[in-house]
Image (cartoon, rainbow, N blue to C red; front, side, top):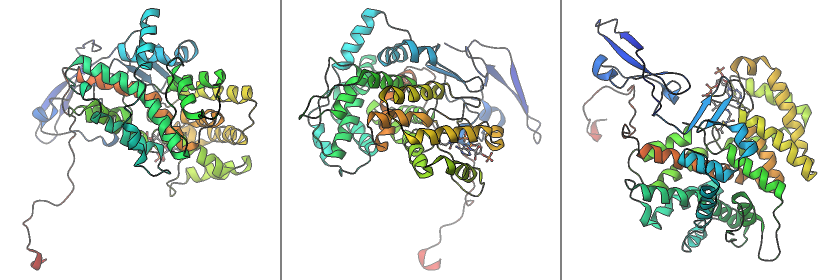
Length: 434
Ligand code: ACO
C-alpha cells in the first residue's frame, strides 16, 4: 500500500452557490501528492475537465515511478541505470511481475518457465497466412495477440490468480515469437521455431534472422544491446498504452484482448510509433546541412510537424532511458564497425534543438525513441519492425499493471465523464420535413 495518509485537505468553494467541500490529499511513497476527488460530484455537483489526463491520477500503482523533473525512472524502486547496467531483461521481467528481484533459483525457474511457453499453437500459423505479405507487423500483432484468447481457454478466468499468472507468462513468452513470425511473413521466409536454450533476446534474433538454409550465429554484442533495449522499454507507469490496457482490463476483458489494445495504442506516432518515424525523418533530412530547416519546420506553429523522438509528457529535463540508449547506440555501431551517416544527422539535430530557445523554453529533450532506431537498424531490422520490438519489451509492463489492476480492491470500470457541447435536447423531425 503506497498511500501514507495525510491530514492535508484542499477546500473548494463554489462562487455561485457558496457550497464548500474538502478533499483529502493522498501521499505515495514518492512523487507528487494527489487530491482525492471521488466525492466531488456528490459534494459539489461538478466533474473535472482534463483532456489528455495531464493532471489526473487514474490508479494507485506499485510497479514503476517516474520523476520527470529529475529524470528518474524506477522499476519497483530500482533505478533504470542500475538495471540496464547490472541486470538483464528476464530478471527485470521477474521484478516487474513479482515486485522483488529473484534469487538465483527463482531466476532459473522463471527463465525455464518463460522459455517453455514461447511456442504458439500450431494453428496460429494459419492466422498469418490470412494477412497480406506487406501488412505492417503491428497490424499483424494486434490481430494475432488478440486472437490468442481463442487458443488458451485455460487462462481466461481473470478472477483466478493462477489463470492470470499463466496468461502473463504466455504473453511475455510468445510476444517475440509472434513478432518474429510477423517479420518472416512479410519477407516471405519460413517461420523459425523458438530455441529454449537461447536467451530471450538471442532467441528473438535467431527467429528473425536464421533460415533453414544456413547456420545463424547470434552476435553477443547485438543480443546484449537488444536485451538492454527490452529492459529500457519494460514499463513506464501510466503511459498511453498501459492506460489503454488498464481501461480495457477494467471491463473484465480477457488479458489477450487487453494486451492487443495496448499494442494498438503503442502503434501511434505520438507514442511507440515514434521510433519508426525518427528514422524516416532522419532519412528525409538526409544530410547535416539540412537539419536547421527541419528544426525550423518543427517550430512553425502553422505546421503540424513535430520532431519525432523529442519531447515527453512527463520528462521535462531528460529521459534517463535516452541517456543509456544514446551511449549504447554509439558503442554498438563502433563495435560492429558500422558507420551510419544518419547518426551524424541525429547528433547534429540534437545539438541544434538543445540550443534552440523554442525547445529550451518548452523543455523538449530527446526521448528513448530518438536513438533506439540506430541500434535496431544496425541489427538488421527494417524500420517497420521498430515498434513491434518496443511492444515485445513493454509486454511485461502491460501484464504487470493489468494484474495489479485486477487485484486492486478499489478498481472500477474506467468510465470518464465529459463536457457536452452538442445540441441541446430537440424533437425528432420526420424525414420529409427536414
Ligand atoms: N517537436 C516540436 N514541438 C514540440 C514537440 C516536438 N517533438 N513536442 C512538443 N512540442 C511543443 C508543442 O507544439 C507545444 O508547443 P506550444 O506550447 O507552443 O503549443 C509544446 O511543445 C508542448 O507540447 P504538448 O503537445 O502539449 O506536450 P504533450 O505532453 O501533450 O506531448 C509528446 C508529448 C506527445 C511526446 C510530444 O512531445 C510529441 O508529439 N513528441 C514527438 C513524438 C514522440 O517522440 N513520441 C514519443 C514519446 S516517448 C514514448 O512514447 C516512448
